[in-house]
Image: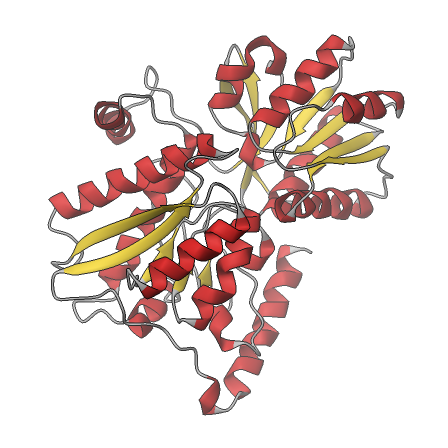
Length: 399
C-alpha cells in the first residue's frame, strides 16, 4: 500500500471517528502516575531465540531511564521501568502484559519486543486503556487503526515499517543492479509475512514475477533446503525476511554450494551482530535500514559520549538494538514532558498526536505523529557489510 493511499485511508478513518457517538471515546488509563513517579513496562526476549535483540534493547531502555532520572525526571517525576521476559513466546508475552497491567499498574507499554509477541498481547493493553508505544516490530498492525474501534488510537510506532522499507530497498536494488529473478526467504510468522507483502507489492508494481518464495519456522537453524531450492530456481537476488542468525545461516549455506548471489535483508538484519558473528560469510550483504550505525572509533560528539557511557554501564559495545531501546524511552519522555505537569492518559495521547517532532542524537529522521497517522516515518536507507561493518550505500529512499 502506498504512503499516500495509507494516509488517504487514515484521513477517511478520522472523519468516521469524528462522526461516532460520544460514547465511543478512546479510554486511556491514568494508572502508574503518582506525584513522584511514572511507571512504564516492557516485555523483551531475554532468554529465547532473539535475546540478541532483547537484552541490548532493555539495556538501552535502562540507560535512558537513568539519564532522565539523573536530570530530574519528567516534570519532576522519576520514570520506573518494569521489564518482563517473554522468551519471544506469544503466551508468555500475554502473561507478562497482564502482570504489568494488573500488578504493576503501568501507565504505558514502551518498546515491547517482536511481531508475534506484540500482536498476542495488543488487545489486552488496548482494552485496559494502556498506550502501546514504539514496539520493536514494524508490522502494520502496530500503527494502522480502525476508526470504528476507538481503543486502537492507543497504538504508535516509530520504527520503519517492514512493508514500506522492504519495498523501498527492493526497488532501489532492482533498478540499480537490474536483477531479473528476485526471490525471498522469510520467517513463517507475522513479521515474515509483512516482509513478504512488501516484496510482493513492489514486484507487482514493477510487473516482475518472483523466481522463488520460500519460508522457514521461527527459531530454525538449518536453511539447506531453502537455499538449494532458490539456487535451482535461478535467483539473482535473495530478500531475507529474517532476523539475526538466519542471514548468517543462509549465506553460509550459499557459500558452501559455491552460489554467488546478492542478498538483501529486511531491517532487523541491519544489526552489528550479523557481520560480527557471520564474518566472511556475510560480506556483501545489503540491508534496508532506518539510520546509520555508529561505531566508537568513528563517532563524534554526543553519539561518541553515548557509546562510551553504554560500554561503561554494561561492559559491552552498544549496538543498533541498544539505540532503538534508548530512543523508545527518550521518545516517551519527550511527549510525556510536552503533556505538562498535570500528566494524564488523555494529555499524553493529545501530546503524541500534536505533530511536535522528536529528534534523537543519532541523526535519525524526525519522529512525528498526528491524529490520523501513528507511524513516525517511512524514509529508508540501504547499507552493506564491507570489511566487517555496515556502510551506508544510499539514503532518503521512498518507494
